[in-house]
Length: 86
Length: 308
Image (cartoon, helix red, strand yellow):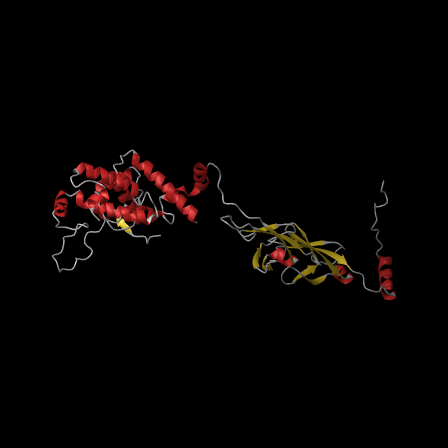
């Protein structure tokens, strides 16, 4: 587990190299569910996920329909990995 | 490594060709799509470094003219040390730094653990059947405990046949035949199967003085003639310390008295009086009783004859 580091929304966007407005859209679409939704505070998981979405969109040309499908499948895959490791 | 060969494009490739080659390779080698693969991580880094150079026309020009090396760093004049780290493949991508997403989920992250409550379903959907880990056999034991430990609860240590010692917590008020299940202390697990449970069946030893009726305890208290006739205060054993109990004058043999809260888990202790005759009924006693009876005759069997 990573040490819980908390990022403000703007900080997280900057670290991930994505515009704040874009991150906000992703939060609205629930692709990102901030660690502290009401306070708009994100953690390392959120930041890494923002980067992943950015990769999927700009580097791999996945369109908006495909992103949530991939995220869902990846999360299931990671969960399964974790389960098997246990 | 030569960025053109990393991306598998020719020196004359157009920006579109480079972009498409990069995308194709990124999809294949992205660490999040190959969680845990160090090879994919390294390849992805190389691909990104190559793309960083070739997707930037100015940098690509410098590389083509031999002004920067294949990491995108300016080439040092002969005799100069290479400058330090310089441009590295952007670990974690876009903004650089920080872990890859899969790394944040490796130990059960917030996002992936939302599938927590449904492991069965995931396994089922993938393997087509319920893939619950097998559970080894339970082992059965029997444990004899004292009446008092059963009533008040206790912690007992039992030694298993293999020499292992087990602490068993006995809840107050347990009855004979009750089984305690100790999770994971049965047959050990092997090859991914979970250990079975130890099942301990409780045998409660009978008490010499108490008997149990639900949460009430009952006892028969031997009392003397004097104690029932003129009354008195006697000491009564309970599960904990003895308590003093008043016997009213003129109590009948078999009369019941209730000691509140002295039973099991808040139940009562019911004391029945049992008159014990003196070891010897001598002439003196007979004389006294005779005299008294002549003055106070009574018929204890009044209405007792008409049994039909």
